Length: 140
Image 1: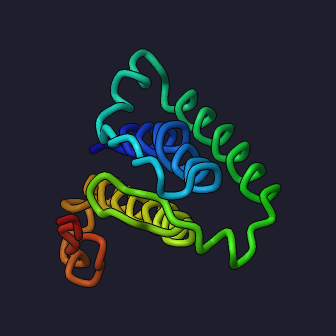
Image 2: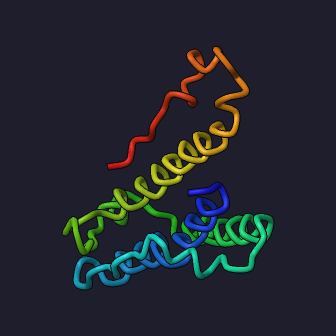
């Protein structure tokens, strides 16, 4: 994945995964199962767009989503509400929101590896001291 693909993936998730699932938990609880997620759905969405356009899209949709989440004024009762994941079964709103944040961190980590890769030869022997040059990823 390129940095472009990573940002496109994050923007796509903002629209079709995190918020729709959070809203579903708040509205329907675990009476409905989340829609399965297409990990590659961003490819079609990003066709013909520049990196700047994809970044702007992500920034805009993320800002809107965070504003909506803040407006919910979530407390312990809401965070404990349950939804139904197609693979995991019952999950809580708290787990979904924590996963949203951790997922971002996973892709930030991935992006640093992708970006550092262009320097692997240029850094010469210092590569031994640069953890980002040694990391092969952590995905399953």
